[in-house]
Image (cartoon, rainbow, N blue to C red; front, top):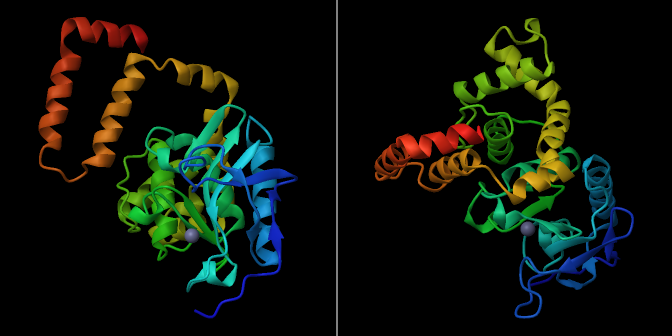
Length: 287
Ligand SMILES: [Zn+2]
């Protein structure tokens, strides 16, 4: 295939944080510290990635990271990677704390907090829920501009994931901009003070408010999600309470078996277990 590697390369992003390649098992497998590498992208896109990471360090309670993990940038193939206009982000190390895209289910708050910042700077972001190919990295490319579009499946998916996991709205994560999604937006925008009641008194006004205040929503999602990386949250994460473990169990069922016929039966069995007086007492004491 005819393709030409961009002359521009980088080894660090966000003010000198090294970017390592972590797709070379057995020594440098996914989720290891990887190995230093040089990544080729067009310089305009490098600048976007640089600004993304710089803002992430500013918003993250852990500050500047130590290592950015990547699955690659320029690849001689069709599409954005073949033009030097794409970057695959596997994860980020802050000291001994790793946020790995692949661990979305167990680390969803930090994951969604990072993605909020990615979305402020880079238009096209494909994530865990987008398809099976993107369950172990974020794909970033400047093929579209940042901003909300209710017809963009990847943007609606992120909105639904954030509404659900960061703001406790009972929204189905299916990529379709539904009335339920709009209701979640209304509730969260009102609670965060992102839009007034008058700005959201019809469906089309809610949609307009969402487009208008999308960046402010991403800021709020970043704050909410990245709080999972605050030192106190880290201490809590070491010893989750029984009640938190039960909530994680319910979330995992919901994520992994959304339409599975056995889901209800499993949920009933868990409820019966949780309702046992001895267990109920333990859960109540940890609430
Ligand atoms: Zn990619």
